[in-house]
Image (cartoon, rainbow, N blue to C red; front, side, top):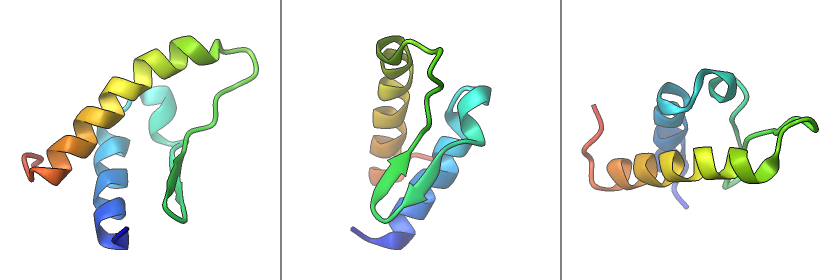
Length: 66
């Protein structure tokens, strides 16, 4: 995957994710890593973040982002 594309998605995600995840997201190779604390319920975090990530990725793909 194109590194420039992934960096654009990363920057956009850092702006759109909930505050507690904005600073934690990072790009490693071709994967976005978002650490989830042991005290968090993974399923609830997933249900919160997944739609945001999919939406942001689709907006970058269609070039709808600002």
